[in-house]
Length: 294
Image 1 (tube, rainbow, N blue to C red):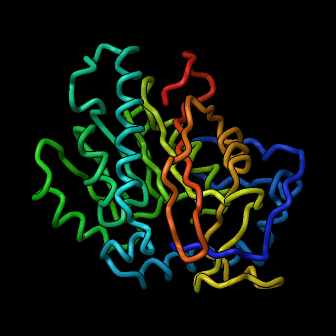
Image 2 (tube, helix red, strand yellow):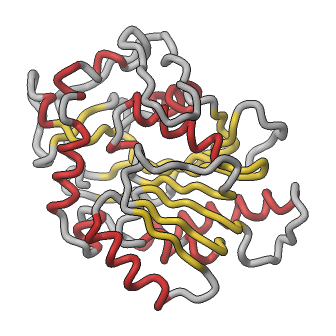
């Protein structure tokens, strides 16, 4: 989705977000008194999921519709480099050979759309990929094209929202979430990340890739018409562009720690200007192991 400067911003307090709920998948509340809580008042949360679904169901199933025009090759190239680095360091601490092409036996992509990232990056490293997408027409296009275009990788297709998809415990080697958390409330993002932490195996990783505000801009809400949100207009919000600090609060609340992060060296462009993209490599806090994976 294209981003614009907005007047609705979140002023973080010094308190951390509330602890995440159990990995059962039940939605957990992030205290309004915690960091960024004021952003998610009743007006913003009411009808959020319905607005997101309406927005994406109205979009086309081509690259323009999937990316809002921000589909420069630098995005996929950067993601592949990140996966290469994670693969090499992951192999050093496991029985897999660094030269083995399919580093991740089972992977999950949430908010997969038509399979752009799966085709352009994930399939080179994964033996099997489950794609989860809320828009049926997008998923059907992925299902019709990916098996024909990619050999050596199998696929599963699930027409579900990220919030309702049931993640099997200790199942995945890799979970990829790109431009996904921005379409979830803080509470749903934390609940999902908690389930993903339980869904990766002992050597598995979660990769989150999201847009960030530039400079000193604060976290903000975007509306479905890509216009400027005015005071009292949170009821039209459909996405949240979070700061680096805001993301870190969510990760900690979900019981995850950062094992590496990287700023995309070639930012995306839109009509407003450059917008940063950052990728994080996450693992459960209790897992042993030190040093960056990215």
